[in-house]
Image 1 (cartoon, helix red, strand yellow):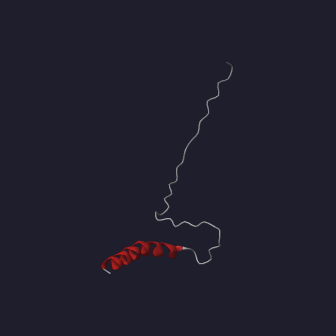
Image 2 (cartoon, helix red, strand yellow):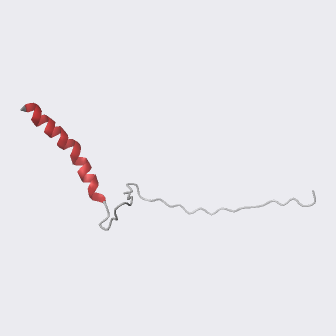
Image 3 (tube, helix red, strand yellow):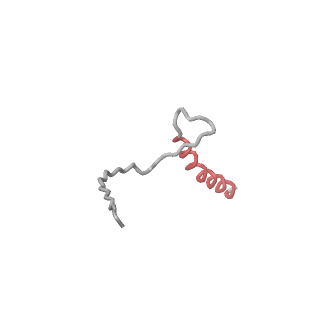
Length: 59
């Protein structure tokens, strides 16, 4: 009986995190489409670059 109880407890512990992860879908999710949750916030950086072209004339 103790073994049955431990097996049930082990299965419940393994299934619980998957249940929590399944709750993060958008409310208007369409079947067959993929959705992802980004855990890291976006980072943006503005960079100004100057491009110079060297024209060699008369070679």
